[in-house]
Image (cartoon, rainbow, N blue to C red; front, side, top):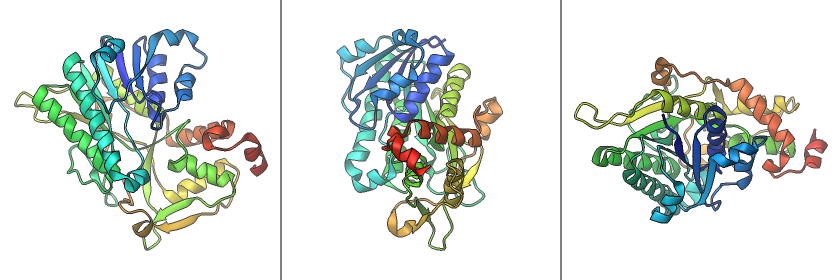
Length: 348
């Protein structure tokens, strides 16, 4: 049974949810390499341990820039590693469009260094978090299945597709036991305010009209949404229940799973649903043609989650509960939106 985890991105939004989930549901110890120079926030790690001071002995926070090779001294600080969970990556489409080169370089360097380290320590599994966006837009009525053709539309999704290619290479050439998971849009507490849900909450609380990308004919884009704790639950399920495939002539590709949300929601409905949770009956919206305002934007993403569902995993938190919980938490912690409590109270 896996006992020692290397968790990258523990100070990030998704990584901190995975950290708390592992601490809650296992007795494992966890090494957390961090730099805090991207979107990592120390408070996320602290809050993951909130109410459980005894958990501090189970984690080790190590300053480490994963875009540089992991040196022997740092590797010694990590200790023996049974599994690597790679979440750390730059992950915002708009920033990738503004500055594509460093964005792509960061993500490719990061995964290459993590996998090179994995070659040395030989963990039982390397779980790598990827995205639905590597497949490009999904036609109406269709959901991408594992190993559909890769067709990224913007520099962010291209960087994630490149990470997958590096994973594939290390799996086949070096025998690294990689498992790739592709995930829908993730929501939850402590998400960076540049993302759609907290950005919309902030705009509505400030009395502003959230920007909603639509097609030239006015059709809104749509997404499936997944709470970060559901991703954490799926990963823990895989650690317990799945043995990675190994290249042996029969298996010609590494293990891959789609982890999906339970409801597809278009962007206009999403704004209205968030507004309803805020007590705003008729929210303003700024509808923008994505063809002109956001190059590389895809109107719809969708993944088919049948494979992992047939093996027995089910998301424990439904979409409605996830969104309501996220909005409520944001109201109670306005500093994560860049607002003060007084500003929130005045609007409400």
